[in-house]
Amino acid sequence: MRASLSRDLVGKKFKSVSVTNGRVVRRHKTAKDFRAMLEGHSVRNVQRLGKNLVVGLDNGSHLVIHLGMSGQLLRAKGPKDLKPKHTHVVFTFTQGGELRYVDPRTFGELYVSKVPSDDDPPVELSKFARLSIGGDGTALRRAVPELAHLGLDPFEDQIGWDRFAAILRSRTTPLKAVLTDQDIIAGIGNIYADEILFSAGLRFDRSAESLSTIEIRRLHRAISEVLTDAIKHEGSTLDDEQFVDPDGKPGNFQQFHQVYNREGQPCLQCRQTIQRETVRGRSTYYCEKCQA
DNA sequence: CGATCTACCTGATGGC
DNA sequence: TGCCATCAGGTAGATC
Image 1 (spheres, rainbow, N blue to C red):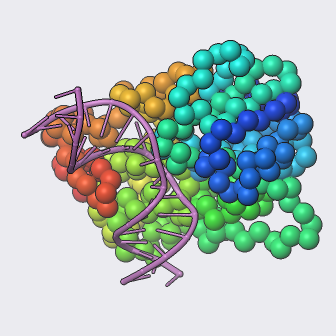
Image 2: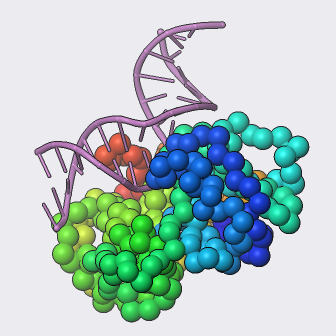
Image 3: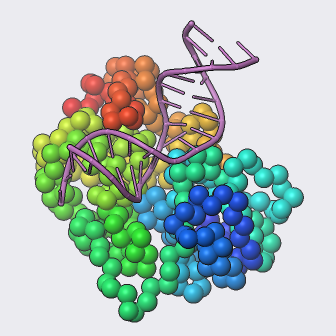
């Protein structure tokens, strides 16, 4: 998503922004306020931190977009292109073309983070983000304080497996809860948590502190490996075709899922039947033979 | 402090 | 045909 938007948006200027469902800009007092912070400004870059897309503007402010469960960003040629149901925001560019935000469940949101000012108190990084030893994540958090609470981003922050070990050692929480806690590691959701745990050969309900050094290194490796693969195959689109890129194109990584959405099917490693369990209201898929 | 629950929404699907 | 329950990529904020 980030790469596709970057190719498309950099250098374009927001001509007008229309908001037809104020809920998706709920951080702003009014939709008008949101519009005013964008109109007349051009896009400098498109970055990402965790699950947030961060569109940098020419005045130093940032448009942040989180797709939630059902959000889509879709390119359109112009206003005569048929608008999908649940189109809540339309960005029109002076160079022509539109970008629409579509979101049936409205769990996603968009907001413009103010230009950082010198009189602002210094941004307080999250406990885990402070462990980063490099990357662009820290600069991004300072530029967008709303994202400072996020934990380590597997690509935007650098962290060795030894520091990763320190994060796990301090917690009795089940592994899956650690992986999906955005304030610890940013960017992993329900699908990728299950795929990462399978790749690492670890059960979702193992206590984080119970991992041996070898297991910690396997998990550390699995996080980058699974996410790198998923990005290479442009993400996971399930049967309802909800996740699509800005051209409406679905991803392909679902074809490579080892466990997610494969209840009752044979494990691709050992032929054992994949199990599904509901944990805190969400599905968890795993192989009881490959994951210990 | 950390861990856990709830509410926020619409739509698809399946049983009766 | 309708009615009801269940499930779906997420997380802020309340509460334990």
